[in-house]
Image (tube, rainbow, N blue to C red; front, top):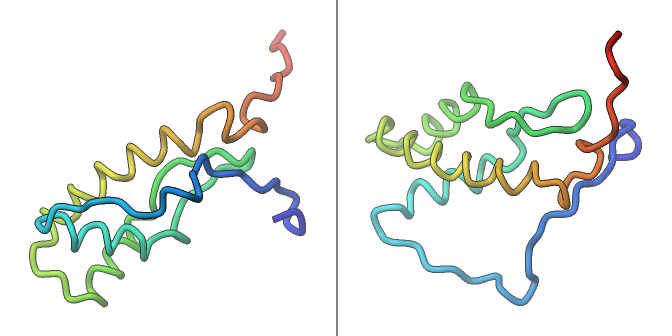
Length: 103
């Protein structure tokens, strides 16, 4: 990331806690969400804004998702939860840089 003028953002992940339970009705959405890991919209200062929804649609088409509306809503729930973690002060210190006063 330094090659592009940005900083690596450490994710608050416990390496000992890699396993997690997923209800069967959410499994397809979790799989798709994980496939979208490179499709985050990021601002010029490094803040995460959300997923690129055109990429979400493309991935759903490639994976032949039948109930797109339901899966999209499930992905959006995960997106909101992920954004709150990705944009936390501890996770993204560059987002807390002091902004110049406007006069």
